[in-house]
Image (cartoon, rainbow, N blue to C red):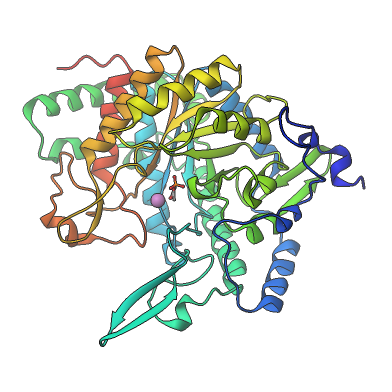
Length: 475
Ligand code: PEP
Ligand code: CO
């Protein structure tokens, strides 16, 4: 077998930077690492990583290449990406209802978006591996019985457990293997559902949008929703009229997976060569992304990500400078390959109109191929007077609308959206037609990390976005 650096296309020098050294799935270990996990038991970590390396992959290279081709299409404005799921997926979430509900809401949102935007929608879940969370502080301090207690922060179920006690918060390498198993079970169920016709027309309960009829809506909003439902039903009937086989083919869903590639022990243990394809693939997921806190150019995450063949998401917050974005792109995709780079902007509704245009202009002027996606969640976090973390539906919608306007005014395309959402009836974000208020937030506040849109809020946002980006006439 060739040595990694001999055939790795990403080993090309980047103009203006020192040529990177030889890459291997483990070369990140020599680099400075943000959000490094302080595993107290090194031999146990080595054993867990060795075990993980010997287990079969979660996804395949041809699925990854398929997603890359779809993203390349989206970069040309021919498709739209819908990425969504939990902020922090938990091992307990690996239950049939929770998985089915997430698929269902993503499917329903995609149907709404297809109708409005008139482009095929690529569905990418934040699931089957979204188990690791970056934290603003490595430790958390609480006062218990009058004493200050400091423990490691909760870094997600891939690393430690949420309860605030020393045993739970100790980083446990066994969770690397356990999370792999839960991701595999989740994926197995998703694949079976999709293969079994989860989304085909014989299961109308999955695409039925009847919630619009009983949500408490203004007459105008209700009329708009009813119009949309009518158009969806017509579209589906038309497909049905084409015949059973065609229906199956036309409505066969594809789902892809994504997660933040935060814990590099996990990512690199499943990074492999595959027969008959050059390069190395991260086989834990189709689309790993680099978080806002770990995108330092000289950091371990950039070192790891530059060597893999997967499409790569990069989160960009309001502090990023245009030249940094260009350097990130060139580091990760020196050949400017199509379908490779997804820039996920999360600027906040109050900043996006000011900070997004220079980034878009710089990237466009430089001729770099990217897909621009808006994450309207992570720049819009607020705390209520009672200290509860929430996000407002209106701010989320506003960031989406402003991002769309920025791209439209610069003749680029808003090519997708990235949501933290759940198919359940949680009360974590305020606003929307269902009327979650600050006072009702505690009714069903279930997230272990950031607040998610609930089922109704998610569908309503999809509708409002489709109307905004598409040709739905307002009633
Ligand atoms: C996330 O997506 O959950 C997250 C932590 O995002 P960001 O890196 O953009 O803050
Ligand atoms: Co989050």
